[in-house]
Amino acid sequence: MDWELISSSLWPLLRGALTGTIPLTLASFALGLALALVVALMRLSRVSVVSGIARVYVSVIRGTPLLVQLFVIFYGLPSVGVTIDPWPSAIIAFSANVGGYAAEIIRAAIQSVPKGQWEAAHMIGMSNRLALRRIILPQAARVSVPPLSNTFISLVKDTSLASLVLVTELFRKAQEIATASGEFMTLYVEAAVIYWVICLFLSSGQSVLERRLDRYVAH
Amino acid sequence: MSLTDPTHPSVPADGAPLLRVAGLRKSFGDNEVLKSIDLEVQRGQVVALIGPSGSGKTTVLRSLNGLETPDAGRVTVGTDLDLDFAKPLGRRQVGQLRDRSAMVFQHYNLFPHMTVLENVIEGPLRVQKRRRAEAVAEAERLLDRVGLADKRDSYPFQLSGGQQQRVGIVRALALRPQVLLFDEPTSALDPELVGDVLTVIKELSDEGWTMVIVTHELAFAREVADEVVFMDQGVVVERGAPAVVLGAPEQERTRQFVRRLLHPF
Image 1 (tube, rainbow over the protein chains, first blue to last red):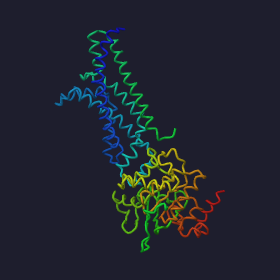
Image 2: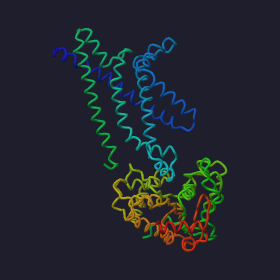
Image 3: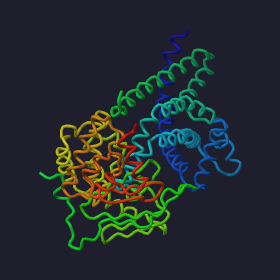
Image 4: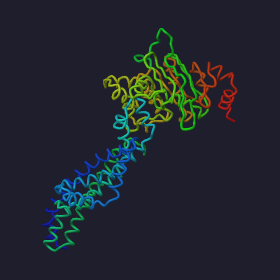
């Protein structure tokens, strides 16, 4: 192990995480989640065209590799006259991906709330929209935290693919330093450890959130 | 203090029924669950709907809160709401029906992520746009009246079934409805908890609330109801004073049903 190289490369890699991996993850997850809620509600729509569109969207996202989606957006679209910069390309691909996976999680969570909750909400005079916001989604949130946390943690690691569309993030930094120094093993293991530490933090955040949302259920 | 004084509907001079149901029909697929049901409830009257499961009594009740949409028939409440189910109902009309009626569910259906107080004030606050201080004061008064003042900050899972159902009743009362609907309010309760809930319902009837109660508690129906309506297979078989329908029914089907409930084996 080349400790000198590890200590000299640590800051550049961390900066890659702080300015690349983490903002890319947060932006993509926030946008993806908003998209997922819309897609989930579309899937639950009684209008078959609307639910059909959502179904096809989820099917395409889940049925094609993320790397291929990313390449279509960054390398494919310019040949039909649409050129998108690295960062926006990555955010579009990742949030579209989160949107597809999280939509199914949110749909299932909404459907797991007992029918009697909708009825009680309607009984007190609520519209569907108000019932969803005040009664159904808060209960669905509790159910969906564990699977959404999985999606979030996967996303952290998937952002390493952005290195292939020229986004300077943690993994691309590691590649650059590895190529220059020839120390591939050291740099790639160092990058792996940093990803792991980020995910450890996220896992503990998940536990805190779950405990908070569990305060109104019997144990 | 009365359970209900500021909200209590006053008796009108004309004596017309507060609630009138005429020709209510409903099918689920090929299964005709309501075959033209008629019902009249006077202001301050308590009507008990009894009958075997599948008789359609719960469907009638749910129709009165817009939770079920009949295929045909009329429901009128007071003089200002007249719904014809043969025509498609607008969202506004369903809303008007829900303004006038409030339901107590068999399985309580309290909102598990809200405290007792939040459960009670949710409708007054978010739907009826009443002032928070006023809604809270009224909720506290109602909770106190059913003996649950000290539970205002508890979550539903911390309460017994009987306590949850009393919160369910308070949640309905807080909406200030004209008609209270009870869907087998004690069927999910352990036997020793039934009494507390029935006592509250009895007090409400004594105070003049208009109520429609679907129940299997025949002794209770006999005590609180002004009229008992026996339904079977989607039709009203017999109706009348509790002493008659439950004590000396005219129809054979009613006799069999009452006998089976009073002497299960």
